[in-house]
Length: 239
Image 1 (tube, rainbow, N blue to C red):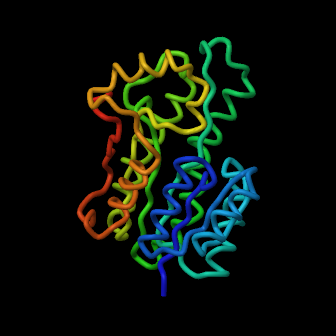
Image 2: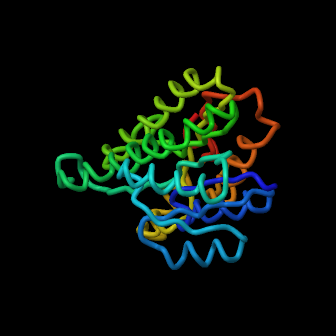
Image 3: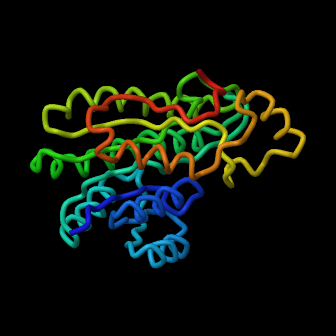
C-alpha cells in the first residue's frame, strides 16, 4: 500500500515538481490548490494522485479537507507545506489586506495544515512534515518585508514543532529555496535577472526540481536522524 503525501500549493511551479517527484518516489500524492483546480486535477491525473482544493489559511477548511483525505484514503504520512504568496513593494506601501493575506497563507496555512494532520501522526507514532520557507526567511529582503516575516516564522515553527513532535516519532524539517525560476519570479526583466545571477556564487538559477530533490531527501529514510533543520537550496546566495 502506497504512503500518502499531501502537498499544498501543488499546482504551482515548485509544488508541481514536488508532486511529480514524490509520485516517482512511490507516494500517492494529494495535489492541493486554492484556486487552480483545473491544473491540480490535470497534475493529479498524470501522476495517479488526487486533487484537493481548499484555502489553507482557513483552519476549519484545512481540518475538513485533510480529515476527508484520512477518511477516504487512510493515514497521511507526509505533509509538504508549500503554499505561499508574495508582494514586492515598500513595507509601508503594502495594503493591510495584502499584508494580512501574506501572513495568513504563508505562515497561518502552514500551522493550520500541520495542526490538522498531527493527531493522526501522533496516534501512529510516525509521520513527516516538511515546510517550505525561503532564503528571505533566513536573512530578510528589502521590499519583501511581510513575505520575509512570514517565512521566518515558518523556520521558527519548524524548530519548535520538531522538538515537540520528536517524542512521537514525527520529523519536522524545512527547505529554504533561493532564487527559483518559477512564475513568481517572472516579473523580473532580463537585465534584472543578470544582476541577480551575479549574486549567486554557483552562477545559475535554481529550478523547481532542485527543491523537489531536497523534499524527496528529507522525506526519505536517508533523513531518519534529521529533524528541526533548515536545508538551504540557494546556490550559495545566502550562507
